[in-house]
Length: 336
Image (cartoon, rainbow, N blue to C red; front, side, top):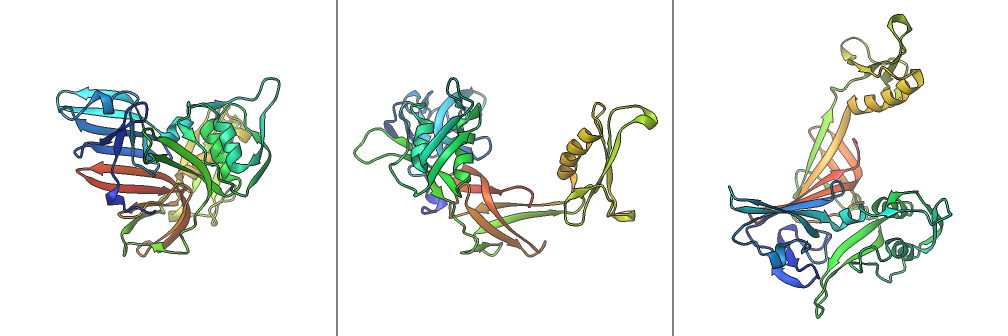
C-alpha cells in the first residue's frame, strides 16, 4: 500500500528481462489479478516496437504484482492500434501441474514455509521466479499436495492453511540488467480495524443488498407424472437452506429447477447449490484512488443507505489505465 495509485507507471523489457523504458503514455491497460489473471493493453501502431512490445516481452510496474508477459498480439488497422495480451505472473502459475512422484500417491513436503514454496516452484520457469531466503517462522509438516492440481492452486491452499498469502512482485534491481519475479509467503493483513471504508473517503464502496431472491425452489427429477422425483427446498430465516417453508403469501418467491436424470438425493444436493445462487444476497465491491490492497488482505466497508457492513478478504483486483488515469477495483469474497 506504499505508492499512491496515480503514481503507478508501467515499464517494459525485452524477453530476456532487460529494461526498455516506459510503456507509451497513450497506452490503455486492463489487468486482472485473482480471477482471469491476465492483461490487455492497447497502444498506437505508431508507438509499437517489436523489441520492447513483441512476443515474450515483459510489461510491469516495479515492486508490484502488476505485470506479465506478452503472448498475444492483435493489429487493428481500422483504429490504428495494436492490442497486446498475456498472462500475469500469477496467471503463469496456473499453467503448471503438480504431479505425484512416480510410485507415490501424493507429493509430500515439509520444512519452513518459504522453503516449501521454493521446492514447489523449482526450475519450472527457468529462473524467472525467485523465492527470497526469508524465514517466516512457519514450519510445514508432511503437507500432502493434491493430485494433478495447478501450481497456483497448490500454493494458495498451502499459504492459506497457515493464515498467509502470496506476495508477488516484479523486481528490477539497480545495477542489474535483468529483472525477476519475487514470490514469498507473508501474513495476511487485517485493515478492518485501522479504517472503515465508506463513501466519505477516497475508497468508494458499492454494496448491493438484493432482497428479491428466490426462497422456494421446486426441484423436479427423474420419473413421469406422479412417479416423478420432486424435492422442495426453502431458504431459512438465518440464510441456510432446508425443507421447511418459512416464507408465505406475498413473501414467497418460487422457481422450478428441472433435472430429469436426478434422483431425490441428487436433486437435493444440486438444488441446494442452485438455490444459493438465486436467493437474497449482499455483495461488496470497492474502488480506490490512492491506496493499493493485496489479495487476501481483509478490509471493512459500510454503506448508510443499505445499513450494511462487511468484513471480507480481497479476492480480485482489476487495474485499469485509461487516458493516463489509474484506477483499481476490488472484489471481496463471496456474497456477503
